[in-house]
Amino acid sequence: MSKVLTILTLISLTVLLAVLAYYFRDTILGLATQPNRLRPLPHVAAERAVANGEAAVAEIINTADDEDLPSEDDLIPLALAHLPVVEGLSRDENGILVGSLALDTPRMLIGAFDVINVRSEPDVDAPVVTTIGLGQVAVAARVVDGWYDVNVLPGMFNGFIRSDLLIDYSDTTSYFAEPLIWRGAHGQASLVDVRTIIPDIEYYIIFATPDNFTGQTLYVRDVPMLQEGTAAKLKEAQDAFKAEGFRIKLYDAYRPASVSGILYDLIQDTRYIARAGSSTHNRAAAVDITLVDEQGNEVEMPSKMHTFDQTAHRDSTQMSETARKNMDYMTRMMQQCGFTTINYEWWHFNDADRQNYLPMDIPIRDFLFYATDSP
Image (tube, rainbow, N blue to C red; front, side):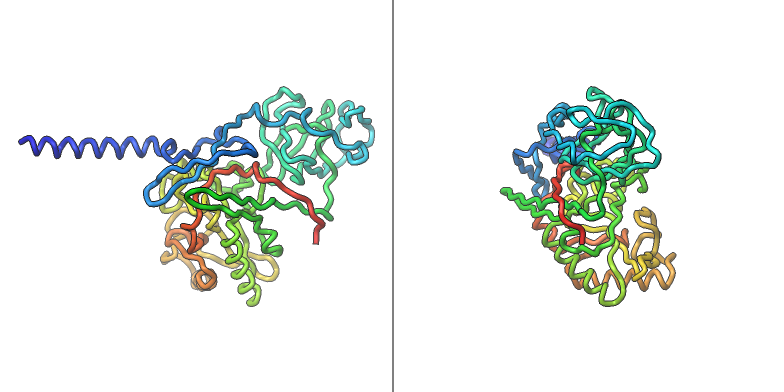
């Protein structure tokens, strides 16, 4: 009898531990799953590795909060000669426009610093809506008390940026993310901006816009980051496709683990969205892609991007023969270049070497950018 009670007790404890592990999974992983925990990353960061089954999850410990964002007055003033001329308004000695004015036509401006606050009102004490970085585009419609009223692209964030922090957009200059190299006890990361490896890649980073299944902008900027090895494989695939009249169109690459948590909370179906820290996107070793022809038109595929139902499955009987042919062709080429597939999403490809990399939760806003002459 005592043996039976012991066995029942052990079973009960096992079930209890499993339930607790599920509900406190984010704490166990050390990964945020709520948008208000997407904080700026300190440049001097600490590392912690936490066991997670067969893998280890690397967390970049993030101690900053909203108060740690640089205020407008912390930024080194730009020379007046670098600031845009706005007809009808003058600038004070600090370069800030004096007064208010509705602009005749919307004006394309770009961020002149690594981190610039976009505020809800034209005031340094107003709440921060989001941030923009060096070279990021903001379209201004008017000036209000020395602040530009802007729409930040491509995420369509609306807010105010002080007028001494933006300069005129120029199509002769391009901005790319600096490589991020990190080594830890349990793995490594060597992230690169895909556009520096594959300059002619077509990309539409869908979670950097509200044009995705959540209806929300989840990345502050449309920068496609991948592990250097994964990007090299993608370039090999791009070259193979180009030889036959096609190019890759990239919809998603690196995805912070906390964003995966947000997506999973909406879908709650691991066939389509992995939990925070469990997605190969968190390792910067997966891509969501389709193909375009020489005119830039997307070829027919089984479903629209991120359609989470049977029509997106590789074995779906609902796709046309053309869609199946295109899917199989893309799959074959990607597999030849070192990628693997999953059945439930025709667009998703994993780097076959993904286990070499650890999940990350580095917010998109924390990548630094540099300027270079446009080709």
